[in-house]
Image 1 (cartoon, one colour):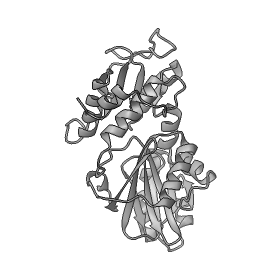
Image 2: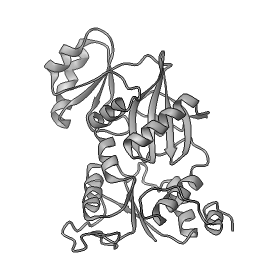
Image 3: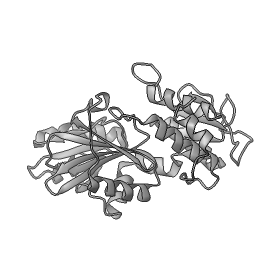
Image 4: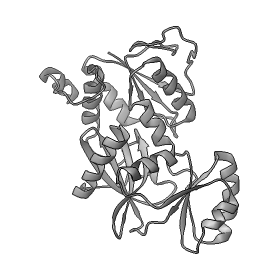
Length: 298
């Protein structure tokens, strides 16, 4: 089958080692794999191939399955156009679009009973100032990724920078600060496989590998609920271990899995299972000869 990863230009501009390993395993299993950067591709919006698994629009030709790795607005728009034509995507486009919107994502998790911070949305300085009661708040853009624009506000004069960000991004998410150990627990999911990594909190934490830790049973149950609620199967959670238990402070589709060990084989297997099924639900058993190829066995 033809598989297409929709990727983003990395800094530095080198291929993702994880995606390279996953692609090699998928190619060994008989798939034709290519990577397309949204910012470099030519996408024909008015493509004549309107429906079915072979819908195209890319200059390099159509694919049976598209895998959305990029979080840029352009990539998300292209994924949406492919979805509207009937293309198959992993993760599904509606799930990715909801995850990218922090308002929708937080609301969905809260409705499902997943612990999240008390959250409000504001459009400007005046509304933000009215929320400040002297206790620290976390402010983040409504749409964002990798912690961009996230800040902790502990003084009212810190609110002065909010207006420009609100004007640029159309609003801000304001959350109560969860009192934690000063580290984020990054939880990474591929289907039924889960990894956990601890990292110091900071704007550049996505560049650090962190240190692997065991997945707590409570976190494991939380992951099951998030998977059912969001429709995502390749995703990451940012969790703060607060005084009343773990709290989800962010959700991202197809993260980088930095610091995780042994991700390539489960991810390749999950993608293969999804690709060969026609009901968009991975999980059926893999034939022995394909399982050997996905495990890298000659």
